[in-house]
Structure formats: C-alpha cells, structure tokens
Image (cartoon, rainbow, N blue to C red; front, side):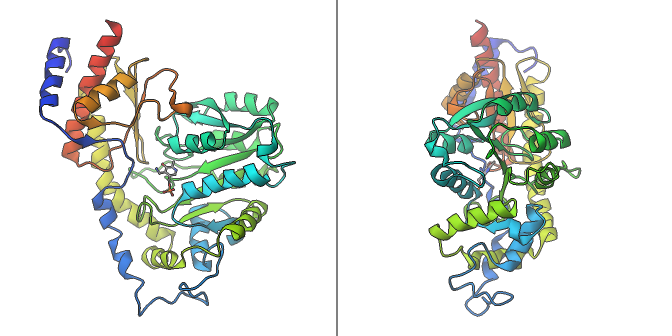
Length: 415
Ligand code: PMP
C-alpha cells in the first residue's frame, strides 16, 4: 500500500466489499485442528475402564476440590507448593473467578472486616487493554473499575502503588500475567515483586492472577514469569493472591478442567464456600485429562503441537501488518511470543471506525472498546485481533481488509 493514493485504497476496499467476504477475527477460540489434537482423550475413559488411581470412584460423589492426582498435576501447573494450595473446579476458570468475587461480595474474604457488598464502594484496578470478561464481572457486581495503563512490562506499577496505598475501597486488581489478553505482554520480575510487596490500604486486597495462557507459547524461546505466590509469601502477604488457570485452550474449550491456587487459608475459605455450592466436580473429566496428559511434561509437549498450528497464523497477521502499514505512522501492533491475541493500536479516534468499515466488508472484529472497562477506550485506538480460528488464507484476506480500513479511517479522521 506504500505510496498508494487514498482513492486507490478506497477502490481496493470497494473491491473487497464486492467479494461478500465472511471472515471472523473476533473470537479467541481454538481452531478445529487444535481441538482435533485432544480427541483421543475421549476414548481414554470407557465403560470397561473408568477406575481412578487410588480409591476415588469417579462415577460417584466426593472429592470436593478434585482428585488427588489431578491436584498434583495442577500444583505444578499453577506453581504452588502443596496440594492444599490447589482447588480443582469445573470446566471454567472464569466461573471460579466470578464465584470468588461473588463470595467476597456476599461474605468477605480472609481478613475482611465485613462483606464487600456492605461497603459504600468497592473498586477494582483494571489494567487495560485487558480481558473484557473480567470487566463484565465487575460491572455485574457493581464494582467500580479504575483504569490502569499497561506498560511493556505489565500493568503500570507506579500508578497502581499510588492508588492502592491511599484508597481502602480498592479491593482487587485483574492481571493476566503471561501473554496477556490482548497485549501478549508477560509481567516482568519487577512487576511481580512490586505487586506482591506494595503497601495496600485495604487489608483484604486481592490480586486476581488469571494465568490463562501459562503454557501457550508460540516460540522456542518462552517468556518466563516469576512466581507470584512465592513473592507474596516472601513479603508476608501470602493471602494477597488468587491464581487461576484451565485447560480450556489446551484440551477442549468449555470442556476442560479449571483450577485455582493460593495460600492454604485462601483455599480453605474457598473450599468452605464451595461445599455450599456443590458436592463435587466432574471427576470423570479429570480422569480423562489425567490419562491423556499424565503430567506437566505431557501438557507442555501437547502445547508444542498447538504452537505449530498457531505460529503461522500469528506470523501471517504480523506479515500483512508490516507489509501494508509498516513505517506509515498509521498503527502499532504487538508481536507476542504466546497467547491468543495480537493487539493493534490505530491512531487516536480511529478504532471504532476501523471495526465498522471491516464489518461492512465482511470481516468481523472484536468491538472497539471491548478491551477497556465499561467498553470505553478513552483514546478509541485499540483493536484485539484473534487469529486462532480462521485459516492462514482467511487471515491474510481479513488482514488485508483491516489494513485498508485503518488507512481509510485515519484519512477520514484527518480530513
Ligand atoms: N481468562 C482469560 C484471560 C481468557 O482469555 C479466557 C478465555 N477467553 C478465560 C479466562 C476463560 O477461561 P475458561 O474457559 O477457563 O473459563
């Protein structure tokens, strides 16, 4: 597109529109090829072979916080130091996060003087761009969201420290610490340490550490994330963090196994509440997963196969962006080493229009603003690109349209 006139770009856009494309870059779902990799799991628990190791019968009630073997696996996955620091949930980590917040609101957490919903105001810090469903949980419970910027090393700790030190109504912060959604950023050691050690006005402040992309590497060289629970313990703040993860984007999205981790006191608190809500989780699914993956090495080996499928898709997005928009001052984008997204920043005031133009040309993009609290991107510049589902060819076509839309929206803005 370099050197191309606006008229030529618009003509190309009209050409693309006439093709009646139907392309979708909005959803961070695994593609079919990735899901196929886990299919053999479905044959590993059968009517003649369903007995769990040890004495837990997966057909029957029991095991409120998971089977012993599954807890061992997730102890490693969540990088906590004992199985007492792990709870295996159902099929969704978002569900565990939502329920943690719900229980904090209705009953308070360990160290709360009263349930959070008895307080005049509850606020959460929301590093943004971030995961829209974290923000929906806050909205759902009437928790006021305070926007915090993202830096190349994770959430902006200067802003965070200044806020939490003086405002006791700030009870929590959302963090996707590795290959963040949508930035792909991994928190640096310093950010982990500062979050664990910072003085906080609210005695019952919690970090919601959503490590959804812990093993979702795209490159040989992986990002390293410091251990938040160890850092909290070292600082004498061991109850500060709730850690979450799941196999949703490892085995089957929506039919995986979710888990949470944290201090023994935090997990005992959660187990107490859990026992009011369920007699136990789906142990047959846990057994399926355990037989398929066996251990963390098995999980990591499986994720290498995912990376082989995903890497060319991510590379295609970056390649088209670089070819079409590189050096033009129209947009910036991330080059993540893992996770599910590429974050595209247009110039101020263009993102909504880009999404609109793309939609009109048959390319569905995540709504502009979705990555910010209350769906309001103050600069209207961020667009989340999700390349996991479409094929490489579809991604190429979709991204060519997106680049045209960026150029047109920018020109309109400056007209
Ligand atoms: N956290 C993040 C950051 C995610 O991107 C997603 C999936 N889109 C989830 C949680 C949802 O995970 P689960 O399926 O385990 O609820």
